[in-house]
Length: 131
Image (tube, rainbow, N blue to C red; front, side, top):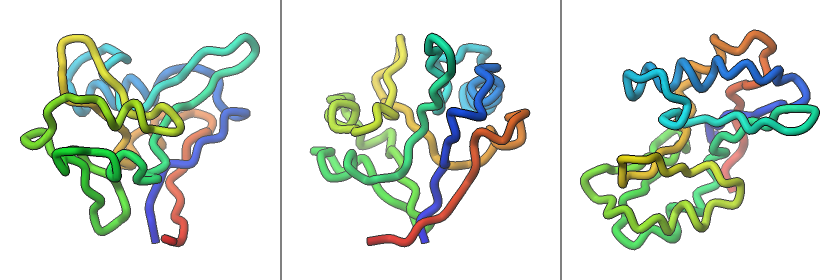
């Protein structure tokens, strides 16, 4: 079974609590640009952008810096990544991110911290069968 974050935009209130906890935990900053999950504001709603672990990025990485762990989560090896951003270009749901001042792309690793911070349960960890 593959672990991934499933998002429910209709439940998202755009509070950005998920971005805040992610940026604070992984990068020790209060900057949503450093979050591995993003909330895009729309006219009448919010859209949650999180990696669904589809592995498209793994297939295009020329340095093999992207791998899949036993739970099916795509991980970035910072020592192998050269910052070519082919993974960002290939990502079908635009969930690989660049941030100002860094060359290594960041993405959701399905850790689940955002689940506890979301007041509406708009983010859930789910499992799906691997192909």
